[in-house]
Image 1 (cartoon, rainbow, N blue to C red):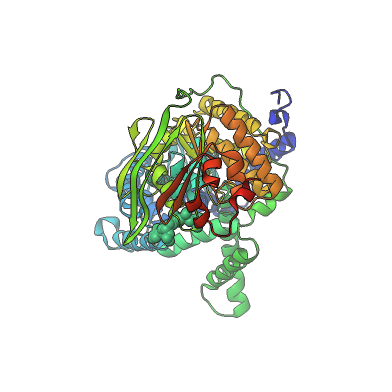
Image 2 (image 1 turned 120 degrees about the horizontal axis):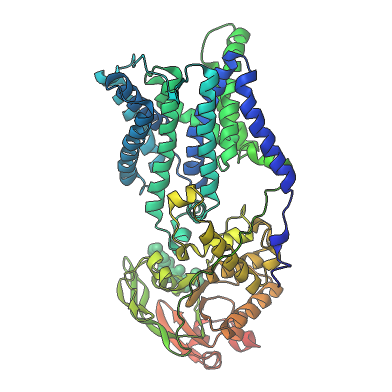
Length: 604
Ligand SMILES: Nc1ncnc2c1ncn2[C@@H]1O[C@H](COP(=O)(O)OP(=O)(O)OP(=O)(O)O)[C@@H](O)[C@H]1O
């Protein structure tokens, strides 16, 4: 497909969306001037809370790490500036940096200790340190105990003292603008795609070379820094601090805001902060008057609201708004340079060698003394009845589960003990038995995920959008691979709209973006219709003709016999046979293992 006719030309709804964004900015800038003073104070709170919730969107909504402890990090920022300004006379701008330093250190240490935890252990850990920090604030005399610290000086900006809520609102607006823009930049970057992939579990992200633990810690620290900034703003807007706004209950409320607004969208977090804060104020007046008694009745309403949201709008309110907004601009950056490509081995040279591979689970030998070789340029099929050990062997080769014994060599390097990411970086790319795509992202963005290991941009460059050259090269490479597999025309549609067959082909394109020497396919035909299987076979044959080496685990005998150059057959963890499809068809032991499957018929 020619580049001129490529989807880059589509710019869906750009003027209207830009116009709406511009109008929202103008309204936001006008609000502090036109609203009554009480409401401006409320607006300042909304903006401050939105900064914390933006961090939660990244941490919980995108990466999937639920944290109840963000309010505590807000407290670290608030108390750092409170102590250093009131007791050491530091400038408020310097204390902002100091707050970042202290928060980053605490978050990094807590992250190192807790972020390896899975499931409900991590949220429990965040509750634990959320409570701990609250009591540190309340029980430390130097921090004013539960009474807190007063007389915090205002922020000065070029001689202007930001004592009035009206002027302070602009500082809070700028802070939220910077944080929200940075978060948006991050999410549309290489690191952002890796963050999204993390949500589906570490397996996928690691297969693309992401150091998942390091990324989790980085996002955790980033979200804590956003909370710290909010704490700094809070301290200087209120001019006093005490532990209450940084309690576990506040941490839970920030989560409510994210969930109600839409925890996977930056603007969802802002919407949630606004809605919950305004609703709280309104209900605080309304409910006691209605019920005729004093009490925190609004918290009960919030609980019901969250349950209703989870029931009827699981992804929050922002996606409902997004549905009526014009679609976001599709941006294909101009390509200045291409990504470097790795040298490919000569066809016929040994590429992958599995020697006496052994994998035991307790007393079970799931892979027992299996040896075979894969040569560059061929398609090798790994087949066997259910439970034969194919997936286990696949996992040994891809580094998902290390071997108990034996040796696996790829391109001359011993990868027996290498991690999934290290193996990927050597030139092995894979697809998954159960498709792992990001359905809300375009085909292009999904495909770009496969090129993670070919990029270098880190968290800071991504936050500042300094990685555009690299991003452009990746975009164009991804588009080339989509065109190569026949999905170029749909590059800007959402992956979730594809039929399963196309999703599997998309996974192949994503793997190809890694510029692999070896492509590993885990049951690529599972769940496909006949026509889809034929398309897949045609694609894989074309790739083989282009020099791509392929190893596939597959159940579908038709597909395997018509596609591969050679086969390795496994049974009860052992290698039963190896040879061309014709040799395997004629093998009596293989026929025996496949009782009921007529292999000759399968090939026909
Ligand atoms: N993590 C594990 N812990 C314990 N046993 C396991 C584990 N993974 C696999 N096994 C066992 O190892 C054996 C081989 O399983 P494996 O999934 O590799 O077979 P397979 O050939 O891929 O089967 P299928 O075609 O059904 O996917 C099976 O007996 C399985 O129960």
